[in-house]
Each structure stands twice: as C-alpha cells, then as structure tokens.
Image 1 (cartoon, rainbow, N blue to C red):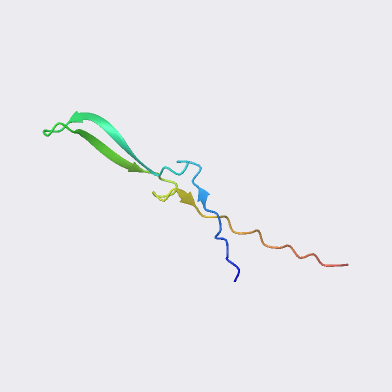
Image 2 (image 1 turned 60 degrees about the vertical axis):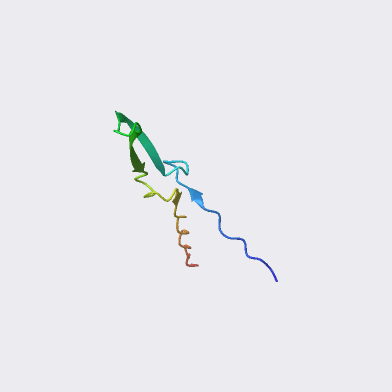
Length: 64
C-alpha cells in the first residue's frame, strides 16, 4: 500500500522554531540558582510552527 507523506510543517518566521526561551534575570535565589523567566513567541503562541496559508480561490472567467 502507498504511504502518504505528511505535509511539511512551516517554521515560525519570528522565532525560527524555538518558541520558548528562558531569560536570566540576574537574581540569585536562596538555593544559589538563578531566577529565570520563560517567555513564549507571540506569533505562534509557543508552538514553533505557523499554519499554511489557504490556497487562493480559482478565478473563473466568462467567455464573451
């Protein structure tokens, strides 16, 4: 039987597929570790991918 190839995912152009990052605040916690903030990409909402655009509708022309 033929195997279907899944559609390729589109990588988010804003985060390049790295949707979540940890930013060091420079503050040390009591146990000696650094305080970090986890921030996600606003464009893809932390998925790292974007939706593929819908195909343009076909234009039908009338023959005169």
